[in-house]
Image 1: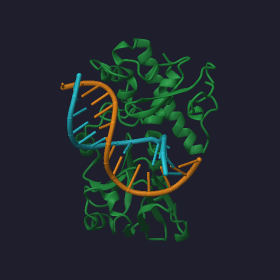
Image 2: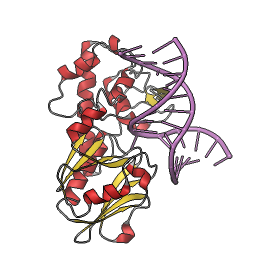
Image 3: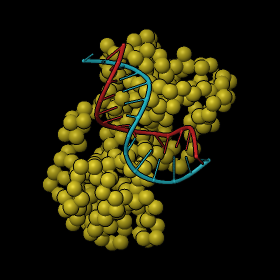
Length: 263
DNA sequence: TTCCATGTTCCGCA
DNA sequence: TTGCGGAACATGGA
C-alpha cells in the first residue's frame, strides 16, 4: 500500500526495528526485485554492515549503512511492504529479500507483484537529481508559493499533474483522488483554469490529508467514515453532499469522484 | 474465467 | 515541448 504516507510508515517501521544491528546474511529470494543490480554486488555491499538511519523522499525510502557512501534504496511498487520478525515461521509469503541480523531478528522486503525495487545508491540527493523527482509535499520547505510555481505554465488535468512524480513526489492514485475530493475540485479540471483560492485549497487539503493518513497509520486507525476512501464504489452515496460517486479514467488510472460537489 | 489492483516506463500521436 | 492514451511488466484476489 505504498504512496507517500505508507512509505513514511515503512520508514518509521524500519527505523524502530532494523537499525544498528549487524547484517549477518542477505537472502535475495527473487533477483527480479534488484532491477539491473547484480545479486552478488548487492549482497557484498550490505553483508557485515549495519543500517544506521532512514530518509524518505516521495515514495522512495533510503537507508544509510555503515559502509561508505552506501545507501539502500527501496521502492515499494504496488504491493511492497516490510516485515520484521524473529521466528522464521513468520516470514511473509512473498518475501523477496530477507536481511538476517546478529541477535536473531529478520527484516523482509516483501512484494507480491514485483513492481518494487531494491538497489544500492550513492546518496538520496543524487538519486533524486538523476530521477528528476519533484519536491516532497510534506517537506517543511514546500510552501503554497512553491506549489503555485509548479502549476505555472502548465495545462491538462489537475489529477495528472498531482500524479506526476517529476512535478511533485509522493502522491499516487488513492491520495490524489482524496485530495481533490476534499478540495471539491474535479479531477479533470484544467490546471490553467484553477482560481487562486482553489490552488490554495488543494495545497492545504493535500498536506493536511497526508499528515492525517500518516498519523492514522501509526495508530492503526481507519480512514474517516466521511472520506472518499471508504466510498470508492460506483453509485455510492457521497458522505459530504449526498451526490452519487462516479468512476472514470484519468492519467490511465481508475478515478473516483463526486460530480455533486467536485467541479 | 474475467476483471481489477496504492506504480512506472516506453512508444506513438497530436 | 507538452500532454495523453495504450500497452507492458508480474501476480494474486474477488
